[in-house]
Length: 98
Image (tube, rainbow, N blue to C red; front, side, top):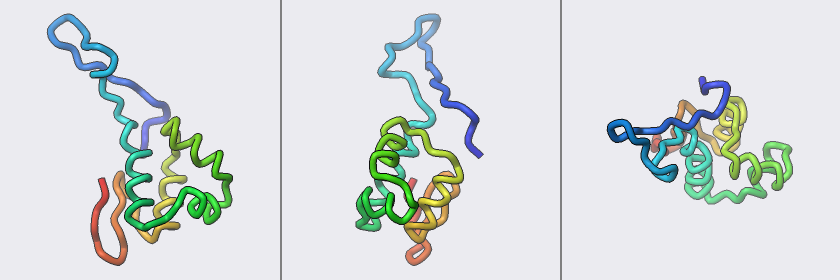
């Protein structure tokens, strides 16, 4: 299960924090995973939004903010004939996208 809020963790070098662009955002990957899944399934954002009953604008905003709930990720996986477990596993080939 995903943490309830987005948290940015900073890796420090000694006592000095690294610049912002070197910080690790542990949620950064979910939107990228969804986009990789769409590429793998040759599916557009419009097609996914239609299957999920959402607008393209809503889906784009959720991916842009990387603001997807675990339920939404499970729904996306089902729409793409995959399983979600922190990564996507394609049902027909067994390929894992992470």
